[in-house]
Figure 1 (tube, rainbow, N blue to C red):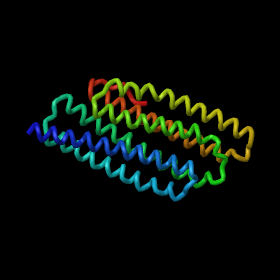
Figure 2 (cartoon, rainbow, N blue to C red):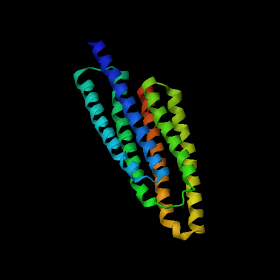
Figure 3 (cartoon, rainbow, N blue to C red):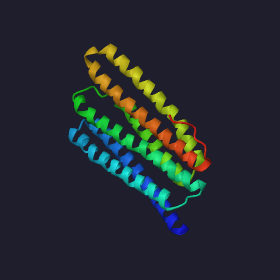
Figure 4 (spheres, rainbow, N blue to C red):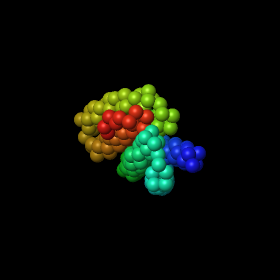
Length: 215
């Protein structure tokens, strides 16, 4: 009985890794569409977000089966309940990547000098998402704490984007609307970082039983 339960727990970890990989993919796709100004590529983000939504439902069903059909001990129970919380943040990451992609068509012909710092933000949050899932799967407390700390870097990058775009609007008021679109994209990246922190904190909970609150 326990061996079957352990197999299902391993399946849960595998499904979480797959959902995390889909989130990494959807963020990278939205950034690539942004950099290229490619509306067709931007449109390819929505189907990946739909895969993330489906994966959320699959994991939720698996977690409920584990809770209802088995009698998990404390640590197992923490792993399952943490996964149920984490998939909500992962699903929202997919939504925000799609939100970024939906802005791409409105940026045609826009000055893209600010894309470097947006690219840096994207790379930072993709790494945070990857490491938060790794922390959960590997029960790695130090890696989870690193993700939480790395959010300061993303917040600083967001502040940098704000300063750049405010200066851009002052320099060229006619670019104000595009600057606001870019600022919204930066805000979505900042929120993805917050979701990665939430995931890392649930990874900590799954090991320690203590939760530090959400970002």
